[in-house]
Image (cartoon, rainbow, N blue to C red; front, top):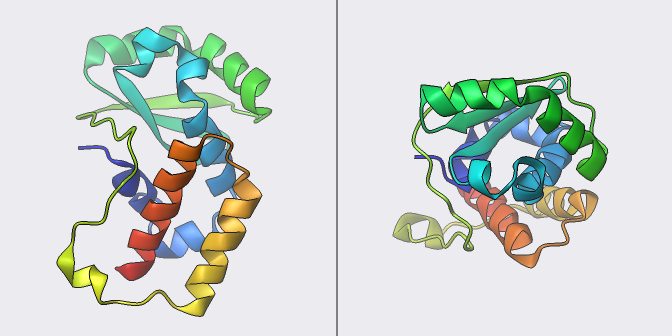
Length: 151
């Protein structure tokens, strides 16, 4: 399953804090429906952005092929909507779980753990730099970053 938390975990804890592409990844996720359109939005999610390449998880090989045929359009849309340079997209087949609602931490173990001041500052800086306009997306990312810092 591909939740916001699992997408961010692909960066891994160490890479996530040092990855300057996180804000770019957030821009792509925040605008994904506009970038690919309503139909394609339902069958795939971006899950990684690194070295100007967007990795996308897609439901099956037929849709993966469709995305590759639309690669030029998707890259142009990313550039026009987010201002980001993308040189290519890559697809992988996997399950898609839309978490369009805010992530809620239901793990009782983490409720008693405290986020360090350094991690709080990092979360604040990351969210400020990302400048996310959509409140639902903003809450999703902030909650996912908090969960990662608690692990």
